[in-house]
Structure formats: C-alpha cells, structure tokens
Image (cartoon, rainbow, N blue to C red; front, side):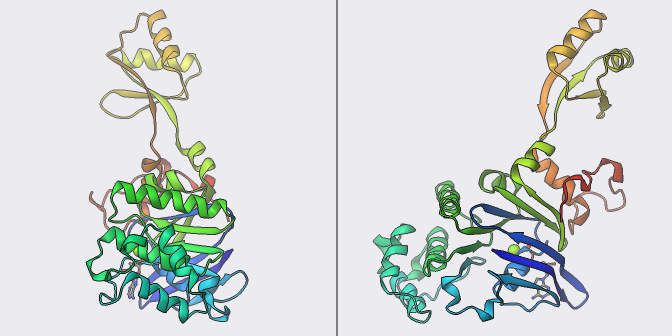
Length: 319
Ligand code: ADP
Ligand code: MG
C-alpha cells in the first residue's frame, strides 16, 4: 500500500504537485493518469525518496522509503527510460543490483526469464533496443520480489507486442496480490489495464475512482439525428420525454434514447430524417474534458475557455 497525504512539491514558483492525497491498494492495478507535465513523475520520485516533498507525506506500508530495510524487497520501480551503463551485460547489471541490496543471486536468472531476456543475458546492454531496455528495467524492479511495483509510463516507445506484454505482466502482478501503480498520459491505455484510476492535472487530484465507475459515468450513449424539420422534431422528442441537445451543424443528440424509438417517432409525425445513428461518447473525450483546464498548452485559443457548464463536474471526484 502507498499512502499520500497532502503531498506537495514546488520548484520555485512552479507547483508541480499540489496537495495530493490518495491511497494505492494491493491486488489491483491503479492507473495514474494525467497530461504531460501533470506531476506524475515528480509524485513517483517522491514516493521513492528521490525528491523531497515541500509539504505533506508519503508512506510505503506505513513507512518512509528511507526507513525501509532493503527497500528493493518492498518496492520496485521503473522510472523514465534511461540510458544503460553500456559496458555491462544484462546479467551483471542485475547481479550488481542484487548484491548491493541483499537479494539472493538466484533471483537474477529468475527475473531475466520473467522478462524474456535470458537469451541476451550475457550481451552488453549498450546494444539493447528501447524495448529490451524497458524489459531490463522491469527485471530490476522485480528483482527483490517486492509487494509493491511502480511503473512510470512503461509503454512509451514500445511496439504493440511489448505493450501487450507489459499489460499482461501488470495484471498478473496484481492478481498475485501485489500493489501495482502505473502512470500514463493515455486514457485508452489505462482503460485496458487499470482497475482503479487516479487522475491529476497541474499537480492536483481530479478523480479517484474505480475504472468501472469511470466508464459507467463517462460512456454516455446517445442518438445522433439530423432533420430538415429540426424544430418540429425537437417538439416531438420533447413531448415523448426525450432530452435532445444541439451539437452544431443542425445535429441533435438525444440522450439515452434508442435509435429505433427516435426513428419511429419521426415516422409517426411524418418528419424526414437525414441521419439517425446510435453513438457512444469516448473515454478519451471524458479525460480531455476533465483535464481541459489543467493542460498547460492548448492547441486552440486561450481566450475562449469552455463554459463551466459543459465540463464534466466533480460528480465522480472522491476524497
Ligand atoms: P509528468 O510526469 O506528469 O509529465 P512531471 O512530474 O515530470 O510531470 O512534471 C510536473 C511539472 O513540474 C512540469 O511542469 C515540469 O516542468 C516541472 N518539473 C519537474 N521536475 C522539475 C525540476 N527538477 N525543476 C523544475 N521543474 C520541474
Ligand atoms: Mg513523467
């Protein structure tokens, strides 16, 4: 278990992490989602004691990282992709780590096997591809057989096979009862991996929710309908108790309605339809709306912010 309590980090004027409080629990994969610059890596570095909080506290199974004896046996982490000490072999790299952390030598072969690097164990790491480097980083995280694992954007730069492998690994680690905390800036990635979701933007907590809840609340289904008799259609829909909103270009979105129902209503009243299609709002869209105000650099004009009423409210923010 990882517990954050009012965790805050300032760099001069910049507040990178702003009063974050949440708990990462065992037995599930917890996704840590936020746009680039949201403060994910800074938070993870503070969990590992690599950065000192300006305020607040973070504990691993009730202790600060520095208080852990042989910390690699409590928590293993893959931080941002880094250049490897090229002169060493994968085997020797892991052996050095094991020897300096009170981990039995036999673990080296085990983790090399787990990450699929056995065949290249005696090769120097400077020839490693990005994917092999990530696997070696994960082998290092697993070396101490820790109950807690943390991965910072582990799928960045990987090919589809590598991405699939990492997803499967994280799920199996959680299924073994371990605590798995993984960051990403991609909602689509989290939707496939995480059971629980912590969303941050500009260092602040935006959501702390189960994935199932997030999906239920954000995968709005609606019917897209276009008609040259828009006003009349609106009346008919209204009388039938359906809520329709205009989404521009003369398109109406009928919330929660069935396409069949809308089509039959239109036919009964002799209304011509030019389009009738069932739709599902994407999770990516929900994430973008949630974090819209906290993204540092917008592609569109900064002078026309979205009206507050259109944002997904704090309805599902907990904690
Ligand atoms: P993320 O991992 O979510 O992309 P980071 O934690 O890397 O975000 O960064 C959060 C913010 O803190 C960014 O605005 C970044 O520029 C800033 N930041 C991170 N590390 C430093 C540092 N060592 N000095 C100054 N600013 C930093
Ligand atoms: Mg980062």
